[in-house]
Image 1 (spheres, rainbow, N blue to C red):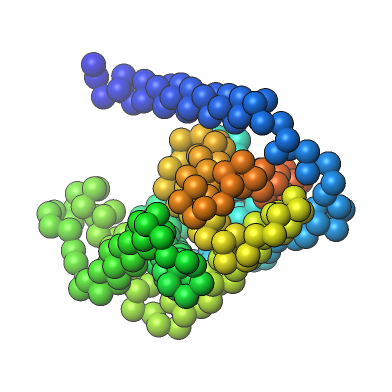
Image 2: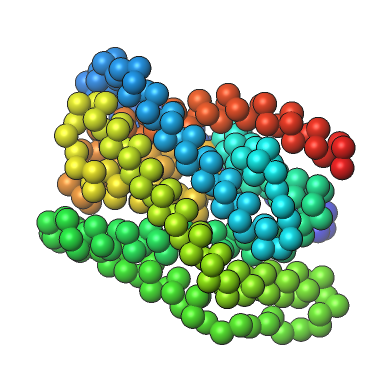
Length: 318
């Protein structure tokens, strides 16, 4: 089979697997609620104020994600307007829900390339920096919460070790000296790898930028935890904020498993697993996750089309 044929078949195969995975997970969730419909009844008693608070937390997270992009790209001389940094955050979320394998992120990279000549290698540097800081902070937050506020049992020790490993591995990336990929710099592959590595090195050495990103990440983590706490409260469950925060921390790792549109099903599976490890009810946690997702969907599908048009106009005028 030729390279062209391999490339042509790669997309359809992944689409098929995505559809299969999506269908299996959705079928599993539907079957679960058919067998245990009582978990859905509390949704009927959610107030307008509780629903509004969930939407507000989703808006705040979307805004912070946009600010991440604004700060990181400014390091490379790209000054995004509010329409761009907020709009790209919304459109990325919308794209990720419409397509599997982070289709929204691909659209963001394409926009920055066409509008601001921001290379894909630099975009990978920004993306890597974003994820490394986020997961380092998640690991730190999870470790602190488990040590200070959670009763230690065997299953919790497993979770604690996981968070400590995350912090340790990412810390190595921060402390590791500057490296350059060996090979001919005229090679397309080597040149792009080294451009991405130099971009990451540039970000890593900027203490002020890293501090700003850490602050944004801390706020984002807190707001995500708050959204789950609100969702639990709306369902009539007296779940401590620290427990809701831990569930939201686990869900963040679904960013690494982009096989279904918007990671639908993947997040829910992680919620069930983490809730079991932490001694929370998996069924209630699943409903809470659905409420949080519904608020994110509302924001994405309301604002996404609007900013898609605005950003398209900017592309045409460039």
